[in-house]
Length: 44
Image (cartoon, rainbow, N blue to C red; front, side, top):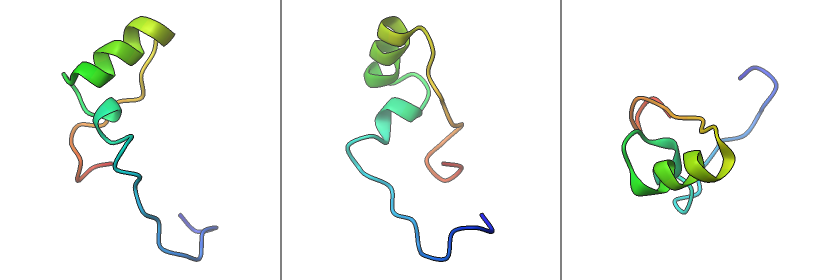
């Protein structure tokens, strides 16, 4: 990202809700109706 001049760190508490076929992603999908999902953690 061109506008961010510092290193970004992922918050480990939120990683699993953005990975496919995890219980956390399924729960978010049922609750919100949508989920932003990446193919894997390396892509995220």
